[in-house]
Length: 203
Image 1 (cartoon, rainbow, N blue to C red):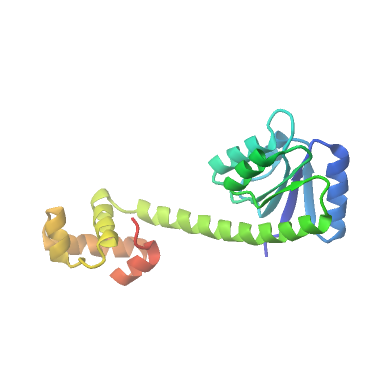
Image 2 (spheres, rainbow, N blue to C red):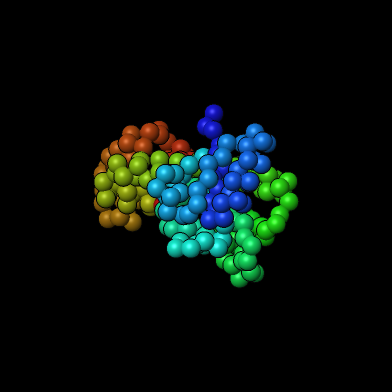
């Protein structure tokens, strides 16, 4: 099983170190950093665990780091902690996907509860991203015409005979059969139903 880590970023040395010690005493694996850049230099955006992130830091603040991670399609859930963040900041953070926005001082038991939620959520995010990448890789094996046939099949579940597809795409039914066979071979399925199960109904 992948080890889950709590990554703490806070420019206040006392807060960062005290929080790290407290979480380690509760059996958690912790890594801490004094600023956003040192974290980015050492930790992958899809690391297993969660990020406990101070909102108010110099250079790149917590919201800026969150924005950056969102652009990187990161699967690392974020719990914000702040001594001076207000309602606008907390709303922006949660809209961008943060698990919570805790104001200092906060009860450690509340943080540990949110960490458990974040770990579970992060696992779902990693699974979803792995699936997206797998489907994109499979779609990438197809020629443009094969992908066009696949898109038509996914968009028109009630009209997937070779004649119907051929009429829509202005090709022969025999050509549709060839493309359909190649699509199924390349993505690793044997039936149209399996295509739906693999890709869903949206192309």
